[in-house]
Image: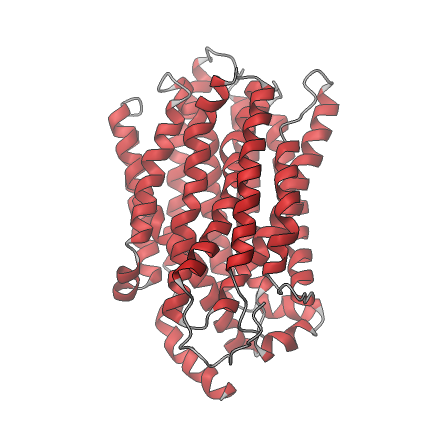
Length: 456
């Protein structure tokens, strides 16, 4: 934490370029494991370990119950804990090593044990990583940016750096993991080795983030909220209608992330004939997304955050229509990936600034400034949506007769195709509906003027 605490009404301070890079580095590290758990872990469990797709899906869904509890618990703890190392940034330091260790443990499934032993091991290690450590790392990290600056433009740029850099972790994992693993022999040990390498890199990224970011703003209203009973803060949060809208939006996007990430591997193997093409597909999606996020700032000022997210969701739906007409045409699949990448950029570039806006709205609406619980919208939605998607994919694949063999049966291939096309289309259609009822952009200036008047 910096020695100098600035006034909450000081909107002139702006973070340096190096601090923005350090902040973005944190989510790059977080995305390394998130990419594995959303894109490749189901494939590992079914095709490498040989577990039933339905069993894996059920474990992922059951884990979401614990995730919901952990998000509320961690939000409660973050609101209460004050460390000399910072209120939010301290958690980045504390969780850096456990994050890497928990990630590797997910891939150490006993290969020759009974189905029950494997299921218990997967449940424990998956929850240790995603329910425990990832939540304790990512929720405080998401809460950090509003403590670094009160300048709206600077906050938007901080989050643009975050979301422009975070796909790099996803890009590296999805593009390089399968070729790297195959180069090392393709077995379970290769998966463990690759994950260990990623975890070491992520550890040093998180240390850089911790060292490079400083907390400067802690509101009196936030301190008052910390002393309130949890039930009172939760009640204030649930009265915030835009919190509900963004939580549901994140659930829809998480459905997309997990359906697209999980099914893309099967789609590459069984529809396009080469599992390693999955990395190319993700690269065609992630590289345009990174470029579009970098270019987003002037469009945010001109069109507004909500309108850009709405436009992007429409573009993602249109991308799936392209695949629908030529599902095995490599060119069309890659073109659709580019469309989705550009379409996703407004959401990822704006979501955390939108969450910061929702905190201000809640403070204005209820008189209670709740930060960690609001930012838990992202992790709650991300995990719950991911759990539902994992369960749904597992059940539908099981119903289709999926075997996980090199040559798959026609009914399973048809299910893979339908999930990849229609599952992703439905997720972005839900985002369109939710953005049509989000009107905070129009109300925000008046709300901030009123809040500033109250605290002057």
